[in-house]
Image (cartoon, rainbow, N blue to C red; front, side, top):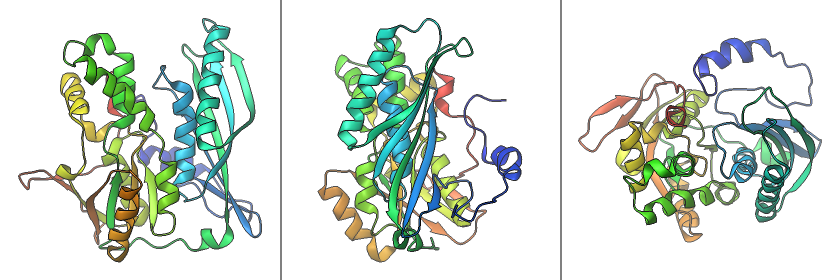
Length: 329
């Protein structure tokens, strides 16, 4: 099998088809494009999400916190706490673990969340540090029941840009190689993108007006768009020129011959909004210093998922496969 998360088809066949819902307290079932479980607590709903970090070494603590909190942010509720599992190879030092925990706690302080517990183990079953984080947040029952159906004509917004996390990871892991094509300031810029990997702020700002959100992880922006369209049973039209790929990301992707639109991008949030609320939400995000771009819209036919380039040439948006990151690191 290919490195990376399972494809949507594999998830449906091997994972979801073997899960049977048994308890009435669980309000939803696992599905493509649905980032969190929801548990009925009466007047409140508890949202839970879980994610590992496997493709990075540098800044792994920061990423581990952010990718799980980002999933929670797609529900429009504030992340409150995380459970952490760390599996580390025998070559790991006490100082390595210390640095990871300092890094995680620093990011938790920024997001105002607590580390609730977990498990830490040295094992020869892994050859580098693996961190898995489970996060939770709480919302009202009314907030959960107020979810709006995504319809034909609804607008797709993207915050910040494309390939954010992948650019940062590759810059850290391949710095020496990249010095042949990037200036010192460009290297610094690529690394600085690690500081953009949280989407909690835009998730909370968009909660009231959005019809749905999805953070852009493995599979990149095209994978995220495909997943939201599948979940909504709609088609989608996207315009490449509006995806805001940075010059540094473009240079790195050209060097390694990978597609920036299929590169992991924690730090980017896909937000679906009605045409009537689009301008209000755009103004809200941009006025809070979150660059946001209108990148396309949903269409009626689920089989029609297209991206148009600057010349008007159309390509299909297909089911995501292994992320481009794994071709490099």
